[in-house]
Length: 417
Image: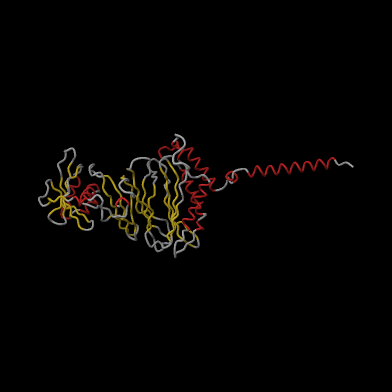
């Protein structure tokens, strides 16, 4: 009897079994990330690595390019796929939004999508970009909306985006978003979103959404602030009503820009530079009335007589005209054009209780001082009455409180403690 072939077959089977087990052992040692090359987080990480590698080609936009939009949308899609974990509960907030954000951020951390140190390991400034910031979720049960904020690191800051969801047909439906997707030197306005404010009641009619942002950078307290206001229709596309940026001083308050939005108005406050370097800065107040798709600036525009004079001189005449004494507008129009002064004198209270005099000269002495008579009626309604070349004998009482540097419409701030 010839048994050779059978023995050879059994030996081959044993060798095959050992090889198969060895293959399985080797397979089990391969990192999970390598086994899930098609997972959303792996795709995001791949795009982030490409963004980092291409960053030197986009120096004018802080390393950002159209690839950043791809990353934003990949991240948004991934987060949206998990929003079902947050139920809509109009009777209260059980912390489901915070729990969901914690789970999402844990997944992002395991996928190594966060920067693991405060500073890059090399001298290459681009090595610090191309990482995600933590996902933020906020659920407002009374207004029945969910807010999502995401961010991607660029040079000296994060490019932040925000999205608003309404509970509809048993799921969260995205109805509004703000992203920076123009990657040109002039058009790219990367911002740290300080606040996303929604007018009440959100679940009725067309709410307004107000965003307040500041430009992030590695140094200096002087940067742009961003104010944007939308009307959000449940059935149509959101309409941008206001898009304003202004050079501002971010070091005056712990919260550098604050605001509120209602059914028919929006109020914003931040700090800007004064024309007088000794005064240094002043509070900028933006108050808008909202009528349909139109916004119009209204009182208050300043918090003191001196600030009002700056505002009146700095605004176009078409706007300053509305805050000028009607009977003197022809003369005040010429006074409005007479600029170039940059040194304030002490503000003086006049004999007439609602009048103050603001003297303004020039540091180099090239322009003679001008004296502006301002009516101030409570709380913050100012009117330009006249301009003269000589101080009024009726205005002699120096009034430092008139230009109180701590005056604000948003008093709940740490700096006032």
